[in-house]
Image 1: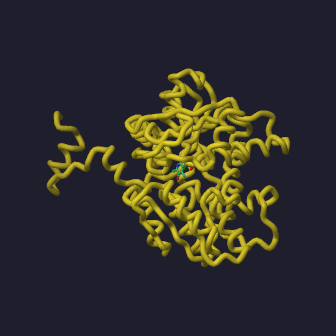
Image 2 (image 1 turned 180 degrees about the vertical axis):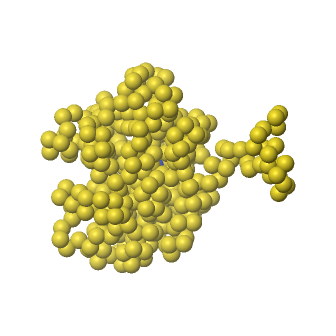
Image 3 (image 1 turned 45 degrees about the vertical axis):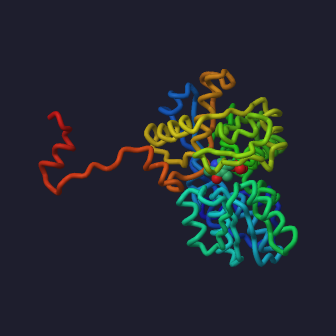
Length: 352
Ligand SMILES: *Cc1c(COP(=O)(O)O)cnc(C)c1O
């Protein structure tokens, strides 16, 4: 199913028709991995939805296959987005695939290296501004309102329609609805999309209950946790470095109506859980994604999530997106002369 992409897999439940030119890179159908060691650390029955396995390395591809297919159907000549990085990488790739011009506006100096490389090499016009994501979004909204350019931020309704398919995959793979869903929250689009996906499956009779939704945020940009916008968001989790969540209302409703909530984690906690994920389970995600694990740990500590609960944590983006933080969080290579004895000393340990 993977090569077909999510529009083909879920065509019956998505707003496409026979005239829609499907712009796909084979997104979706990502692994749902059981994580026993990491789960033991958290005191829960843990599963990881590894969204880094999408074509450009993040869940943004789910929304982008829908947004670009509909833009192509509508005859769009250009698309534009503001981005903390992954939206730009995804928009650039899907625009190239569609043969549509792409402009991305990013906060200067705050986009992880891998994401910038992806947008640049795919031929998008990459514009850095001296400002935050929130400033970038304000500007691209004006461009799309004043000119014939399609906005592909999550204000574009088709983005969430694509993203909700991840909930259906979890239902298919697990065979039932997990007790808890936990995911990092920036603009709140993804938590809104999952909640919508589960509710639609419930309405169709594909499941008999709904999960509790837990949104995880970085302390320095915890606009949902605090209930007010954050003027100058600051965190190493740059994908969720957002002060004014676009989907604040819906994200809040998802947490509230599901009986879930929001949890914050410090940058240090996020980086620690980023390390645990790859060292306990071999699952390499970007630090922003590990906010879901760090937020879950704090929700466990605070008694919001009970011991032994079945939890699916969404790891939203691939570890290769952010090599700088990965290298900063790990031991450097051991450098030796090209000699057997030197290698032996390392392999066998110094004391032997
Ligand atoms: C976009 C993104 C998020 C946040 O998703 P929202 O829909 O903005 O809440 C989280 N993690 C990664 C890796 C992302 O790229």
